[in-house]
Image (cartoon, rainbow, N blue to C red; front, top):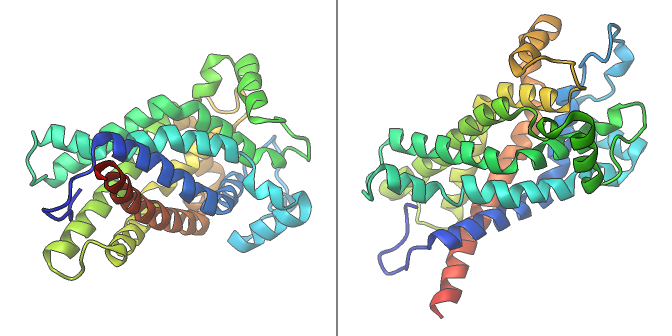
Length: 304
């Protein structure tokens, strides 16, 4: 990672792996209500049959969604699926973020001057690897966050029950539902998020506009969150709809995207954009700032 002083011992791959997972869990704990609001807004308007009524549009905006959920389902509903979310981050972020520098060095053969192409390739690789490891946890998280739409009945009673029920009713493939759009989404997200953070931080340090400390990390992370939201929102909406869909509702992720386009128009692909940006922006700031501090703290503990 750029910006380490020559006198500092660079963090090991193990420190990055553990630090990334821990930092992502902390970021999830703080921003999870925004993620839940995003999922509710993204699935709103999804047909449950041949009839759609205006009354089904119960969520309006980020704050309106959160207040409606608190009023009708209680404050705990904002953290539906948190256990699966933390499981996901500990396995998912550890791979896609923690291994990014190691994979980047592999592609550049150890050179300190990584091209944009090498960074994009590293981001795509770790993003795809992370999905291969953590896809079932993502499916369960999305199902939990969205389940209140089923007329008040809870589809799953616990995280373990969700894993068992999905495997029993939909087969092993049900736990890996939406893998293709999720691979595409996370390749895009990882490239936009990590590469943008890397490039912004690198530019700030080389231009001597900032030093490698909290303001630099904050600025780089905020810029990365904004770029990521713009690029990844369409794929994110399709991923959420498809992973949450009933068995047989969509034949594929492409069919899901075409159905959305035909029934709801192009704007459907940016449903939940504001909570996506609020969530990704705040998540990136918390995660990257925590990650940078954890790496230094862990290395200081190791050397002492």
